[in-house]
Length: 89
Image (cartoon, rainbow, N blue to C red):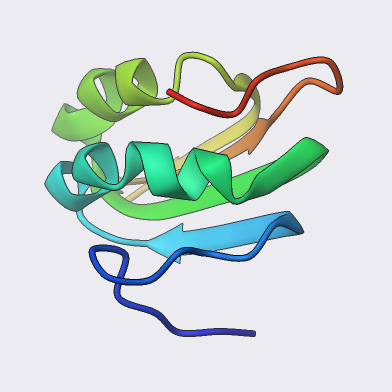
């Protein structure tokens, strides 16, 4: 488990990366978050509101959405970086 400022820290590669940020911050952090996921790994996103769904999903379009949940207007995603993929967005 690591807590880091995405604007000043390079994230280490991991099989699972989790982030709980607002939709706007998730879009801004899309490249470093996706870049930290190893091929075949999972990126878990939470903290976005239902109206931010498409904007956030578009920012992570290179990753495969395999789980989504909405509850009380909040959205959570689980995305997978394909094994043969480039994580750079």
